[in-house]
Image (cartoon, rainbow, N blue to C red; front, side, top):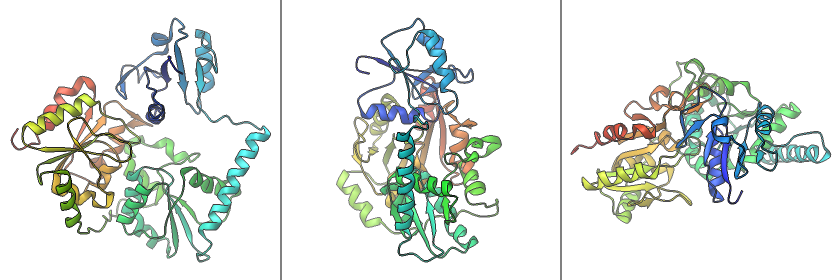
Amino acid sequence: MHDKRIILFGASVFSKEIKNCLMEHGFDISGIVDNDSRKIGIECMGLKVQRPETVLLPCDESLIILMYSGGYYREMTHQLTKMGYVKDRTIFILNMKSDESPAIVTYYLARAVRGYATHGKLLKRASANCAVLIAPYTGTGDIYLAGLFFKEYLKKHQITDYVFVVVSGACKRVAEMFEIRNIVVVKPTVADDIINCHFFLRADWQVVVLNDGWLREASQWIRGYKGLNFEKIFRYFVFGFDDSVLHELPPRKDYGREVDGLFEKYGLAKGKTVVLSPYSNTLFDLQDDVLETITDHCKERGYTVCTNCAGVEKPVAGTVAVFFPLNMAIDFMDVAGYFIGVRSGLCDVISSSSSKKVILYEKDGFFYRCSQFEYFSLKKMGICDDAVEIEYRSDMKDDCLREIYGLFSNY
């Protein structure tokens, strides 16, 4: 891949994850192509989606084409080979290669055994009727939604003993906000193994998958159909509740002293701090120039500006990198006053904050049978009615900035 231009075949929900993986290793995407006429001309992760013929003809040996498709990779590969590209030289299929060879059978058997063994360890000191509740995705927004219905679900199914399995420390912290106990953190692949082993053995285990669609579950393919948004899929399909069941927000705790310490440490002004949140696992990242423009505008008007960063994430130029634990996020935002970020799990966590919140979605971004905005809008989900939610595209930059700037009292 060195000295090659990388083209991604398919503007799908997997595109962002593929791009993130490439960027971790120092690679970037030069273009995105798709056969779906509905997607031609839209923007995906800052790149305009084009037809394969427009970008790939005549055949260019300096290109590397990557694809991930569960159903159409054979047709896509055939289309590319007719153009002159060669599989495993200029065409690379990212799908897991699955056949009946001894190696593949051994691989899946080993994972099934690991799932069986892990399930046994989880229940080693538990009662006979202990339930294993698994949140297998790294999204903190998923955990927040699960928390909104969690206590009512336990009551409905008379669950008194459970193990709550999550796949990251951040997910654990969100679960703790709802006073969920017996939390165990495992690797994502191990969580998959438990679920797959349960299905494979058709075991009489009390295993509940707390996700809005998982692997072979048919429900994932109706996401967005006729208004079935993130909250509704969780409500109806994960928990089996009707519209009469109300959300139960996490109990508020007083983190005033800790938040005061963070504001003093980073030199932030109470009530006049803008928190930028440019990173997202699932959706899109905003271009640096937009964030830098917002930073300059806010600083000129006397606001302090910081970037919420975790791990290797870098702050926006001209801002200070700030990390606050998720259990303090609501209190931190209440004191800061302003939030501007792309749609991420953090938006769910701070949805009940009194701060002024601007949440950006990728305009025209697809998510199964609807747009990203239609599926993930906090207002449509019914968990936040005071956020300013904006669909962004590069040619809409000036209009979006004007709407954002209107939030500031001295604009």
